[in-house]
Image (cartoon, rainbow, N blue to C red; front, side):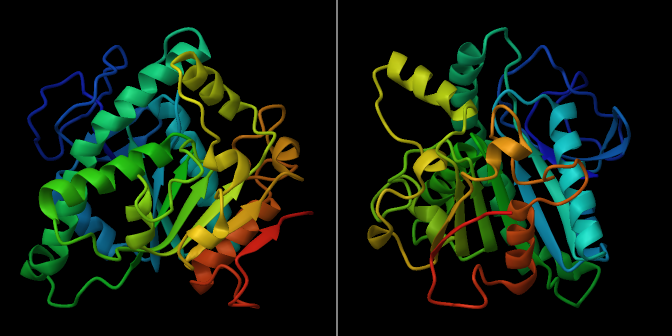
Length: 324
């Protein structure tokens, strides 16, 4: 599995292609460096470097790439396990369609979920600076570097799946990218952006708000939400403790659908989320009632991946409720 990370390795932070790469799990700081790597076996990782990594993506025998940005309190092994489950569901749905590429940012592993949450919020914000460099590097490669070895352009579609606090990482990454590299605005880089159990305020996607650039960078933005998502209550508890009162996008969906762009869609997962992920009701976008068997959330998401339309049967529709 290919992945990108800004977690510190136990080795030097100086990039060297094909060297072993081991996560320093005691260091939860967000590195300014980014590392383009591969999981070669369970618990064994190798650094590839950006040029080899992007070449591997281009040469991979798939039609689409899904960048997976995980949520809070996830160590690398948790991230790879979730990404592998999602990859296997994609392969079962349509072999050769999707390659899942995790972005691994540094979560805390302190005792206590609320302490973890607040530490991870800071790490999510700081990670934006390194991941903005990843997007800028991709633009440079797409426009020039890829043609040094192959004159045929890469035609793979790029999608983003952000889960939980990964939505904050995505939001801040786009904000930093625009501020320092693209003052004229961000390009429409992503075919689909899936915001699942999003731990950002529910007005974020509106014009003039903090997540507006997510809408600009995507053809489609699909918000999956559930009001009884227990894991997001850690967000509410932590933010109230710090005198921040707000409803989360992953609990209620967009605050007002009339105030977000028409490429934003809302999917209510209230009827299935705690069945698929009991009791938290937070990671409901992969398997359904049986591990390894797709749930209705995954099936809806995968249909949008394949078609490029969230509701292909009714292109004017913008909201739905998922039920088995």
